[in-house]
Image 1 (cartoon, rainbow, N blue to C red):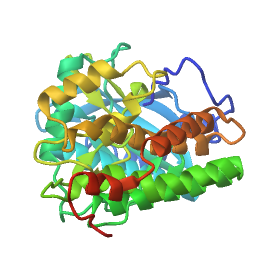
Image 2: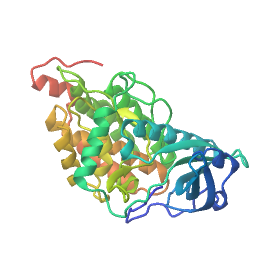
Image 3: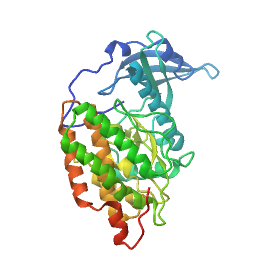
Image 4: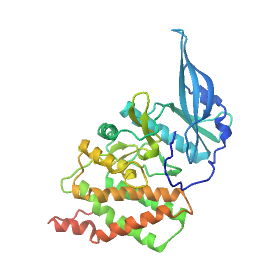
Length: 364
């Protein structure tokens, strides 16, 4: 379920998926509900730009104990090949998160394709009654830090086992040895997609090249050189107001709608990839959450680069947002301002930074 809280909507089009697909429970969906589920009702619940979302009310029957209990499942419905990949990526993402920190996510049940139409696909998870307000700052920060601490990459590499999506846009997930290389390929992919969505622009093209060739090495290479090390950790990938809430039953924070990757982290982690979407002032979650997070995980070295690293990570996120809304240049303008600032601040790039400290630049 997505609770969209952006006060300035950038998309006013109807969801592509027809509403009739959440007006009944398909045979494939019912087959993947928890064992003993007797369906009582299905109704729209939540909101999303890209999918239809619903609550499936059931009665759970335990015949051995002769017990019955009301329960509910959240369903998300998509269409076409992109939609199929989206729900598969979300299912694998939510399984990874839930397996790492169960109380922090709904329980993922299954994904699949409708028996009544092979073009319609779904994702199922446990229904959570969520509060309308944002989660408690300290509880959320502590839980996010715990997730990152426990979520070690299974092979020591950056990436993910399957493609995952931010909105309808697939993100780079190929396994990669270094964070600089992974992030460079990731943001390059997003830059190319953004240009195809919004059209070419000479200044944007120049800024993108300068960001890739100068800013990325300057801010990311120091993380993995000079005796400094970081480790790839499991991140949600799309933390913002609309993908977090509080479980009213337990009064604990909860996250959903994941697009996971194993990304920048370390033994004393600076989880700026998951914190990047909290940077924009348009979001209700912001600096108080970031500040609280660093009470549980100290900033990565070089500490003085943290805010600019965060701006760079947020740039990737905003470029992706620009890709999602062709014709709306709001996000592109934000990205141009960020790139102008970073390119102007680091004209000598990584090489100048290394030489200023009396070291020999590491060539990659």
